[in-house]
Image 1 (cartoon, rainbow, N blue to C red):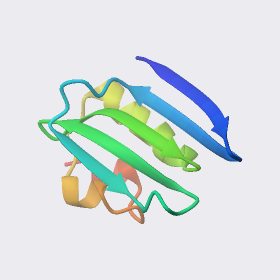
Image 2 (spheres, one colour):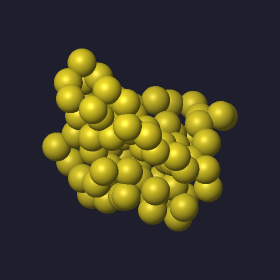
Image 3 (tube, helix red, strand yellow):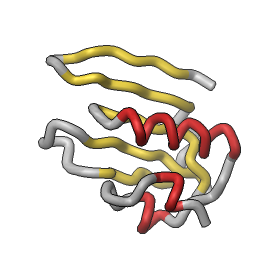
Image 4 (spheres, helix red, strand yellow):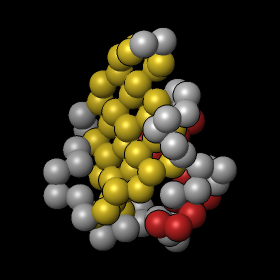
Length: 88
């Protein structure tokens, strides 16, 4: 699975997966804030995740991507809900 990280403007940025072919994008937080993430889904299954200052999202999201586990999109979009708790 593709993975990269970088530090940009004092923020730790991580990306895992491949979002081509995704049919839904979920924001977890506000990109105007210091920390947020984006989750791409295909048929409710996570296929990629971009995390800015949210390493826990990246770690949990990577496991969900690798396992191809469907998530509840409403719960997965809530940044107060750990991604592993959004599994259907």
